[in-house]
Amino acid sequence: MRGWVSRIVRMIAVAAIGTTAVIVLATEAPASAATLTSVGWSVSNSETGLANVTYAWDFTTATLASLSSITMTIPSGTACSSIAIVSVYGLGAGTLSCSGTTVTYAVTSVVSVAAGVPIYISASGFTNTSTAGSYTSAVTTLAAGLSIDTGTSSSVSFGSSGTQATVVIPESLTFTNSTPSIMLLPVPGGPAVSQAVTLSIATNAGQGYTLAASTSGITATSGSHTYTLAQQATPSTTLGTNRFAATVTLTTAGTSLAALQGSWGTTGEYVGYASSSSGATYTIVTATAPTGATADQLVVTDATQVNNGQPAGTYTGTITYVVTPTY
Image 1: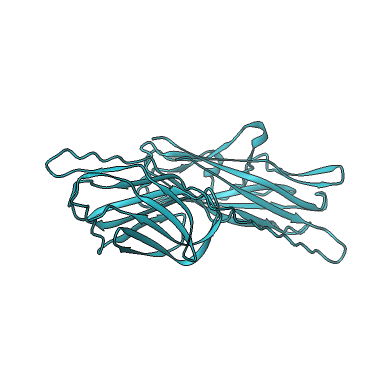
Image 2: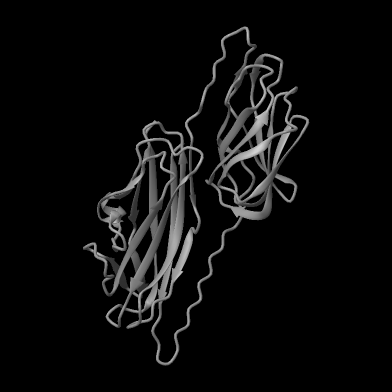
């Protein structure tokens, strides 16, 4: 699957004699229940009766909800008393249990998950059903024990040891954004202010991926006037006044061979975003192999510094990240 994740940058710079006061409220209203999309289920080996098999599920949420658990069905006759979590992306820490034909991932601390968020769960220790056939898995998200969204995977065929086994591994990409909305409060004439956002990328794309970014522009309006907080035009280790820019740090386990590109690769260098209105994007990371069990992490630190030459106002804009896998 391909991940598109946008986050809203809310920035307020209000100048007043003697007092600076800013209040920003951001709320999201839950949508009605819907069908999960891009539901996938895969197994590391589909031989019937085989022990120590890893099962993996991936899907995309359809409804904003405070998720407490995820349930996933498995074929009748599958043994699951010794299963253990391998990897989870898109949700917080949790525990895994199994009863009959249902595997449950219970989130330790209930977390609000937006619609359109890709989630990945894999677990080891399954013993496949001894009955050959084609099976699907029904995945359901729950909040406080109530069903929110559900979806059904494509089928997986289990064959006996006397026949040829076919294992279909679906394309998988999980992208998470730790902070979909940030707020910066610069003081005119004061020091730079910043906030860090952590992006995580996990994919089985054989030839890796690229991560690029652009912005719609950081602007404010006052009557008929529109003010723009300009992007830093020239990369530099010094943040320009009345400019918006970011520095980045990449952490990778090494299997993806990911590397920062261009000026983004210079430690501590502030780089402005490309303008999405012009159709341009700046490639930040290029990887040439799958990430493996450990996701690559990119810490993006957005920053600004202003003086009295920047008009007061509530400046908002969207920074869009685009992850493109090459399978």
